[in-house]
Amino acid sequence: VTRVAFFGGTFDPVHNGHLEPARRACAALRLDALYFVPAARPPHKLGETMTSYSHRFAMLALACQDDPHFLISDVEVERSGPSYTFDTLLTLRERAPATEHYFVMGSDSLVQIATWHRWQELVELVHLVVLHRRGAWGDELVSQIPTELRPRLTRVVASPSVSLTSSEGMRIYLLEHEPVPIAATDLRARCGRGVTIDGLVPEVVARYIAKHRLYHQEVTGADGP
Ligand code: ATP
Image (tube, rainbow, N blue to C red; front, side):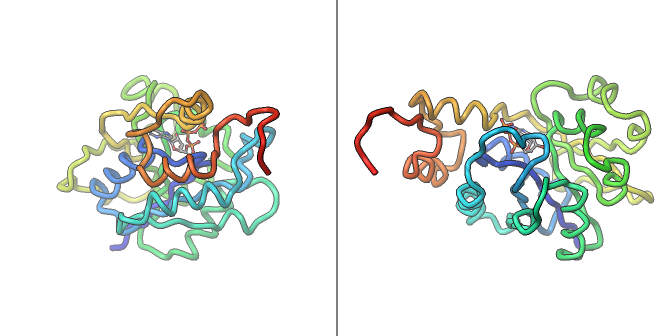
């Protein structure tokens, strides 16, 4: 059995709140590979300014270099128009054949799922792996998701010995782990204020951000090119 997961996001920048739970997901669900899939034009962030795709991709590449399970897919950059996860997953399933495909998201994203393009079809394409993010979890989370999805929920403890349900149909795996309270919005704000982000992103990513001054506010009137 080969198990391949896809983890979509803006990753502006990728941080330990993505990486640590993703490592746990690999272990708990015995994943063979996990592809980070940076969004080219996320439909819910179309009006917002974002760091260029190439910088976001480069930071992911640095963050993934030492983990044998972690890969990156640039599938979204090839398409024009908004990058809908549904379309991305159709392409990815063909390009990365496996017996089981998974899509990883934070619990805050699961609560929003009914707003996603073709979400009812999306949940038939892949199993979902839900990471514990701040906010709703447990019964509260269950009460916030579409009723028809509730019977699919399966709690997974982050231990390699977990036995996966072999029942038919797509499941939604809730990964039990301590939340890692990090958000990219907060990291960008910290950089703008000159506050350290050490310990919140891999060191190589912190160095890349500093080198390219990605989130440092421009100083008006400063000399330079
Ligand atoms: P922003 O603050 O800019 O919205 P973000 O930190 O939420 O960014 P994204 O790239 O937008 O990061 O998130 C991609 C996916 O990762 C989403 O499904 C989100 O729920 C999940 N995620 C982000 N941060 C965490 C975290 N700390 N713990 C668990 N999941 C997370």
